[in-house]
Image 1 (cartoon, rainbow, N blue to C red):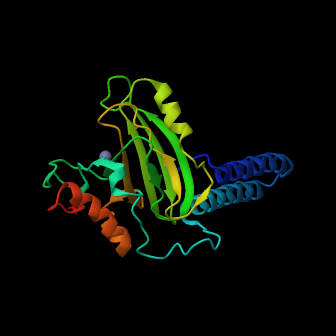
Image 2 (spheres, rainbow, N blue to C red; image 1 turned 180 degrees about the horizontal axis):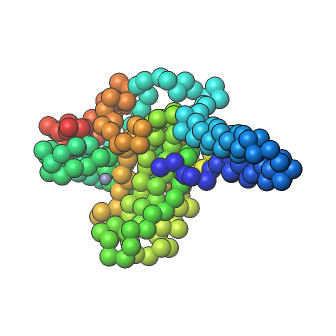
Length: 245
Ligand SMILES: [Zn+2]
């Protein structure tokens, strides 16, 4: 999930590159073997320090810049505007096949009607917008994944999964996504309009990952967010839960 080459890594590798050039320049002038070895060892230690600093900045160093409190729980709102924007509810989160839908599913699928608003469930920063191609013949070939980072460990995923082989449909859905990488969003902000390109399978797979692991979203919902979410679930299946272990 963490892109390897975000700008912090460019700085890290740039610093290591400059260090290496400096090392080669100095090494030629030093004649004493132990001094040469000491210089080599310092080079290795400094490089490792840069890599650690880059890793820390990417993985741990999330800073909301005072926009919201990233330690606040629960914080998730429902990612839709009206229950009537969703045409079906077929699954929530399940860690095993012992659930009403009968298979493992690590997100919640929203079968939005064409043109419905997809809302941000949390405040956060848009971290990645990318298209995954699962190859011709896959049940759903293209996934458009929008990741929003809430804090150093929690990311919210909005995966637009349209059943189409025609990339023009993907371009169209991309054009309806109203945020770009780096944007800060607030809870309830419109992230996109959903483009149903004609297929019944078209939906948004939504979910939360905590330390790179998809997890049951229930614990993260605010009281009002959870009530709204369950209102949708129960409109289709009065006895279902949102999550099954
Ligand atoms: Zn799904």
